[in-house]
View 1 (cartoon, rainbow, N blue to C red):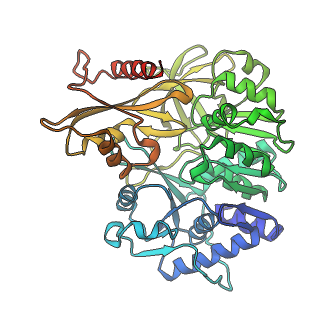
View 2 (cartoon, rainbow, N blue to C red):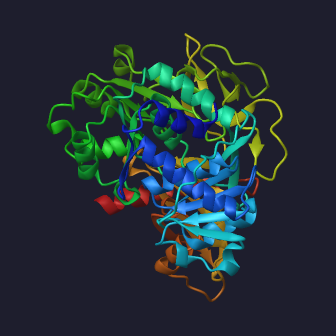
View 3 (cartoon, rainbow, N blue to C red):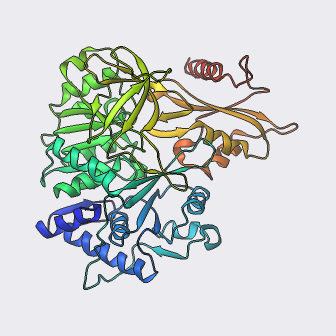
Length: 495
């Protein structure tokens, strides 16, 4: 069954059950299905067909979900882009994936001129569209593309991760079984639709015939709002990055009241979760606590359920064992499969692994994650860190090379290096800038330059002006020295 058929099947079984509750509207499965057919008819009239890409640039809403469903019903491929993404970044994605059409909400529609987006067709969401008499239902195969998620790229260009219907269903079906998801469940959607965490929120709910409740993007790090949202919506399954949960604990009063009785599973992924916070969360709720792991290229490929033994250790929870039918293993520096107690790079093969990046050769063999793990005695894995310049910051995947490439494009910048320093919620993105001769780029000018080209989470927290970048003996930038300086500077500011 393809992804859009999950909604069609739920609409047939219980049409009046709530499917999506968003900031714009709350819609039943029947209403969502009709809206998707109406939008599919409009796209079909614009000659969108099988395999075509359609960029959906919009804030989270029930209408945005319907647009993604509409694309799938045509056998096309949706490319979700958060509504807060700057037009320059959107234009770069459009040039990369050559979409047949773009859907945007009314707020974003005027932000990108036709000459910039180059799309043959531009559909503004929110209109009064009419559903056709016959619903759209292209029978997509498991190997057909469903969506493309763009991630930060090391060359300064974003990379489009191609995900098939089979990739997504392998993950969703496995997790619906693991969670024993039911129609009565109420899923919270915290992540943006362009972030792979949202796949579980949306399609896990649809597969179970449950409801999904959308957290507005602008409130995703407003801790008091998130705590109220959890209680008022009667959320039963929560999934987010650990930093959101940490904020809710520290500043949102999450632990001040009893845990909502409906809450039965708290899932977290995207970054290590400090064990003190996990202990507090476990003491507050009897819900299952699950640490999920997997890069966008594999969605979730391992998981670990928090136990009493987990709470007794002094490290974040392990990333656990293989999930979703995948095979995972670690390889040492000399290419040997790592055994218990050894460290190595984690490799993944199986049904959730992408077929490749958009516009690049297909993936051959297992996906090398670039993550270093330690093999535990029971064969599960403990996450140790990255082996390259890709980092996680507040749950978002950030390629430092893309930040550097963007700032280096500033006319007054000669050299730049980006580092992430600090721990947990105190992690910060610092850039060290060497100005061109005679120039003096201001902090606001540099941040504005980035904000016009990259997502908000990639805007530097701190800008350091330096006369030269430190180098190692082999001439490479000494990033360890820069990270140490960033940490020292941060501590001095707190004194």
